[in-house]
Length: 147
Image: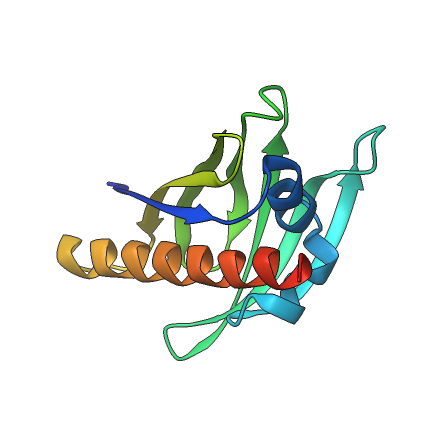
């Protein structure tokens, strides 16, 4: 069963600034510490990745997985679902962006289900670590870009 987790962070930037970083999959390895390689397999008419393969460091080894993206709710949010992945049954989530005129609150929701027999508390900790790290690194990348 997938473990659900949610996190949020406030970023000193516009929603467009946040989207420019988070939708630039090719550059994830430059700012997202656990992401070692990204390959955009398919793109939509606007050049956004619709099917993206990742190689990340996790659980003491390198893990590959592929996600498909749904942009139908942009610019407020977008979501993804797992196509395939090593040791994963689910890695589905979404980003939501609430811009208040000065800053953007980024909401990150994630459902993780490992195919290995792992206790729920370990899955929840893994999801929390993924999300917390991702949001802090996103904040640093977006705010650093605007300086």
